[in-house]
Image 1 (spheres, one colour):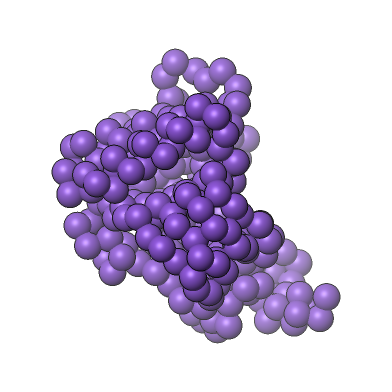
Image 2: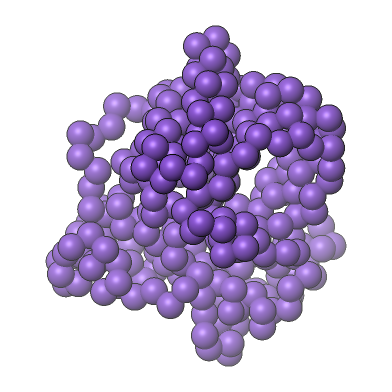
Length: 261
């Protein structure tokens, strides 16, 4: 399974947005950036994290760096947007990622909005300031259409930290890194994180990494050593031991059992 990197697919480092005509099959892959697609016409099938979704005109989907997907589309016209999570307004992006992967069938005013806003975004992708404003508008409208519960007026530090963790969980990431990102001391951040999430920062990060490792074991042919590195672990024996503690099975046994199911 191929890994798509922002360095390769987002040449300017912050955003790629284009209107495309597609008739192709793209094998299961994953990437270290966010991707949004909106179908103008045509249709096909998207498989995300092992779940199949039929798509048609007016449908929009958003994937995070935590999702895997393959694409099988027929005579489709679409808007494709790939972007770094660092450029967006975190208030709306974090709200959306709580439900990711997101699939939305846009209708009426929402469809007219996405038609026009994404056309403008693709036409102005080289204007960084305007492109970011348009992308934030698209994400904010998507958030509204998903009928989110009424949000707090100010995004909590821990919610902003969660978005930072999602963007960086594959890398060497410490509690101090996350605390610095939201301008808190490590001690205070640690206590606040435990109060809001009910688990420690380290347990939260490891849960995300092990769940990601399970997805790689399910959907890729990567070796366990490769998966260990891809999930942000640097000590292979420790990864294997802790994977068993987390799942009750060693990675190879987990993969064989899943293949036989």
